[in-house]
Amino acid sequence: MARISGVTIPNEKQVQIALTYVYGIGPKFAADILAKAKVDPTVRVKDLTEAEVGKISEIIGNDYTVEGELQRIVTGNIKRLKDINAYRGLRHKQNLPSRGQRTKTNARTRRGKKVTVGGTAKKVAAKT
Image (cartoon, rainbow, N blue to C red; front, top):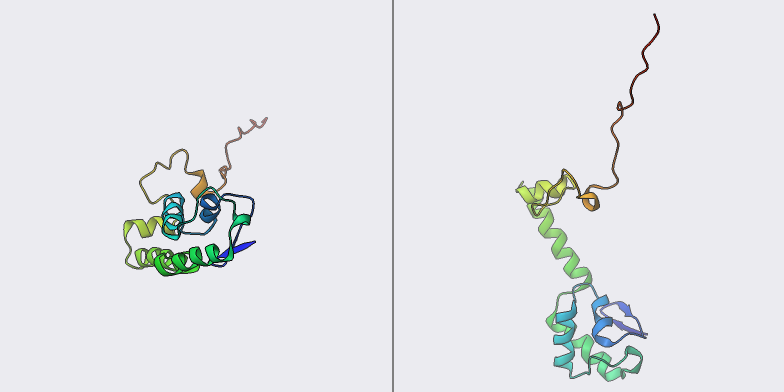
């Protein structure tokens, strides 16, 4: 089990795919890292040597912002938008989409489970 940037990456996957388990590394950055480390992207994680794992970890540590540090930066950016009352910050405060998507329909991921408003049932007429 190889650990890179505090994340245990899966042994049975190819290195180029396994690196994407680290927050902040996608397919493009994974390919760039493996090119710098001179590691074959299709080799399985279990077949990597300690030297190769160390080289990959060193490149990520020196050149990329990943995991907790990156999450702190993103959280700080959102907090800044909220503090200055920017439109995007207000949308974040209200748990609504911040990039212009419609909210009359859809937007369920951001808004949560649908809440039905009461008072829709027909009232039975009373006999007098």
